Length: 345
Length: 276
Image (cartoon, rainbow over all chains, first blue to last red; front, side, top):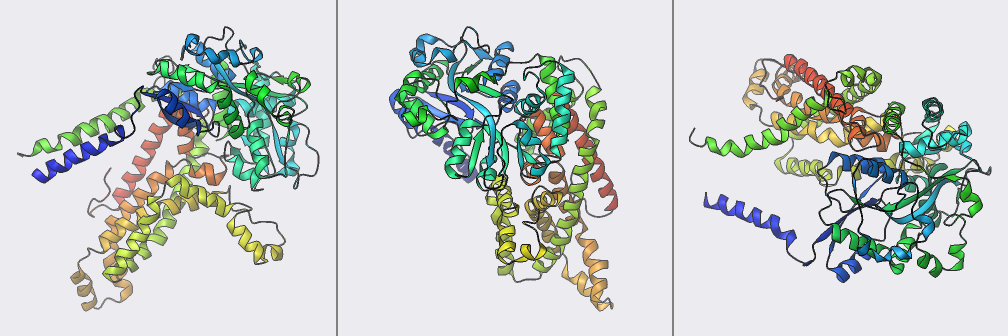
């Protein structure tokens, strides 16, 4: 009996262990971000400077982030959703207003990325990256020049096509082909897009998110729709890959840092957001993620070849054709969710 | 009786983490998002009949294959030397120390069109002889079943092995003394006696197979989902709808319970190895 008691005590003590070790006088901050979307090396520097410990986790899509937050029980302090998801979270009262007295570095951010439709008063979000969606293809296996979304629906590439594994981006690619607004709330237009996606399913290799890295780099698939920053990373590993921003238009997205309602470490979250806007940090992150920074100071510090990179910083002419997603009414969001489930079953 | 208090932690654990979630699932399954009572979640499941059918079918095939591989394996193993048995058991357990997703992910690289198998076939000139660039292995139902069998086969071997190893040798000797040939000894003595192990093996392979997610996504391309994926999608994936997810879970549980009940009937009179 004594032995058992000793064991129980030992187990209890052992479970306390992780709390010891390095000390963080100012507590912690729980960061929840997209996969492959940060230079994790900056955490050490942040921890040293502020005495705040960073707990880091990743998600695969805005919808997944939403599900996790909606279920409750999670305790994140900083999240980095995209535009339309930010406005949905604002509409549903799921975000905390940021105290900008604690985020003076907001001054570094180029004003063209602030006060966007998703957060008109810019009370809830601090832009972190921006970019466009487009088509990545392997110029070795696809010798035709790809110019538009229709390539994603071309039966001659059957079995070689990868589609986004999230409803909003997948539907957008179909809506662009049909010539409809990506923010349409007309169910008959969404139905048409659904029919197109249903046809596409027959020639798809599959629906993927970050698994695309392996598939496209390794030549397992020839063509896939994904985000500009990730495309640049893939092109570094496989020079045969090309990225095009489709002619009929594309989505421009802004991912911004927000604080979910009820965050336990709001001050730390603001310290973290502020830190993320420092020029060196922006540059370090850009180096890893290949996503364009909204910081004007960081932009100016970039070498010319990066500034002129048409994938990272598309010209205004190209951007004019791009649409930003806005949040849709609940009814349409539910409709999207239902169609997305139906599509995959 | 005196030590009844020892069961308190277990009872509390069960109440908190088994009974409460079940109650929540039932509540969610019969409510709409505004909290009102509805049976729409359940009655609307007809749309997903094909997903139910496919999941049941694939899980069934995976279970049958696991049994065909697992039983002879367990039987042969039980006749080996003690040292051999220990080493083999450890080898069976070894892959389970590696994360399940990681193991399935590696199957992806093995089965891909540009993966290890196709590369090997290409090097051997077999692909050229067949006149194809690759043999499609990944993104097929076969790949999904392979993933299930690979991941859950140990759960078939273990219970069968542990029952066979404990069989009373004298019963087998008695059968032999009475003139039974080896065929009769196996099918009329050993197999019936090992049935409890077989039944729990079937349960332990079938239940996780039918509810698996990730395997069909990684090895099946995520185009035709299985029940597990569909449920996961309603909670963590691209279509947040816990009410539909709960309804799906509830119906799945009922189906699994019916399957288990039928199986228990089949093995009635045997030791009750299948606990439900």
